[in-house]
Length: 183
Image (cartoon, rainbow, N blue to C red; front, top):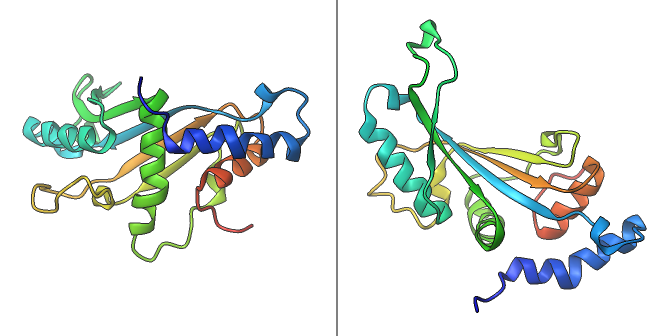
């Protein structure tokens, strides 16, 4: 049987009881939980060279531990030279143990490696308890080698929770270790 991820154990033993006490939930299952983590990488050069998209997919699979799927354009945009159905990026949806492991590495290893990092903005909540952040340089993940990466790319990471309000989600994610800026 596989070991339980470190962050998930901490959630069950410390964070969840603290949230139940803080918000006065009557049931343990009312406390916010993680549903999934979605990681997206746009690759604009993929319209010209498919090898670029394959390299981006390899890098994203190294970061997340899961094979990404290709995202395609929904409609044609002549200004960008984009045709409907053309490959323009890749994405991964993480659930279960991989989600907890990725979030642990993101919070404790990757985010502190961002240059001049002063915390994440509180304005990125969507009103339903989900948080989206953008990362300009995917090389903050130590799994990638600087020599093997042809170009730095950005990532969009969405953390989906069961929280009903942004205040609950902010408290939950701060307890997990997300470095949000003080209000």
